[in-house]
Image 1: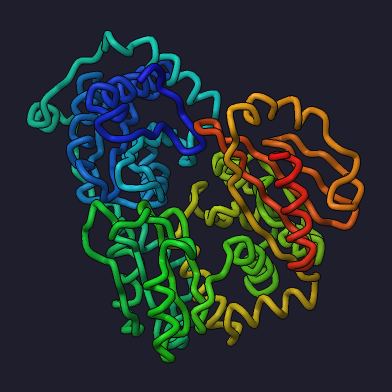
Image 2: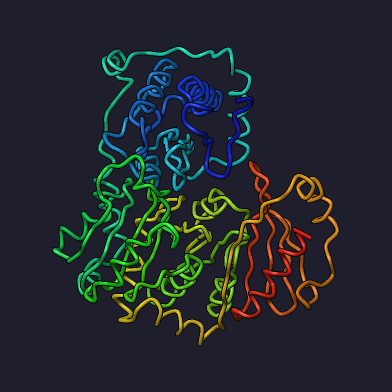
Length: 472
């Protein structure tokens, strides 16, 4: 390992290679130094983890370093969802939190996600400072540790239950009386932190449900803990095979992403869920404000926003930018195509648990399946289909990539380019409303190709053109 580098959701690495106890302690000390430099060390920090291998041990080591720096630690008693930790930051008014999680990534990964006092993912200026401090210490770590026993004795360590206040807040934000009329639900926390969160409000009201993959398994059943169509065929099959199930609700490893299965077993793309919920929250809930989406997220959201006369904020990829707009109370909902969303008045962080319950409420109150709601929306604002591919680059293509996107064509897929957006990657918006986005991975020779059009046929043409532009 040569360098600590924070991505869109913190620093991640493969355990026993770069994600080691020594490197973790260096990163934690860098975060402590950042808080001390900002004068926030007196507020304390929350530490939690997801269900990955050795999570509690990493939590303990981090607590020793913070305590050694004189910063009080609020230690989550069990594995804890990312949105719950965000909620607890705001509730306790701490300086921030560290969550040991690699979210939806395969089991060999772990990560350190730092969220500052405003409750959202750390912004680039914060992570750059932490990176600098950490990289200066690599090889010659400068941290002092205090034992957990001594930290507890001196008031620098307090164990907390983060679930109760969060679940109470969720029950104030969701109409569970409506959900009680929906019928049977299927739940899938994917061996992750949503155990005891997805099911608890339903149990209280005797709402019928079936729950799978709700025990601890650090291997996540042999698949990445990602609630996408490719990784939950067993769950899709369950919903499809049981005619009593009205809706399937899934979350990823740290419960900040969602996966929705319609009553007939159809997986619903997150892009479409965000658009449907925007329409529902404005039309039925009467919530006022704009909408934020990342540059890679569907323009179906823009069509819904136009229908209601509300502004659209287009952001770089990374929920921190959307979270900032939530904190400023500018938007009704913010979302990303990678299945993250939150709403006005809630945490400035992705919340897969809230997303699942909001979809259940929408289906219950509207009295229609998700598919029926989507067809109704298409009839009102126009049909949109979307897709994403990963394009692997040869060394030659990788070397030529920058020059290629620096000399864009005036026309692609037979249509003139109307607009070029470069807030994150390179996005070509065509005159017929179709669009393409090229985003180069920062860690591997891969270009992520996103495309959208009004029909499957047109989408196929756009995607082929985008692929040929990059690979030929």
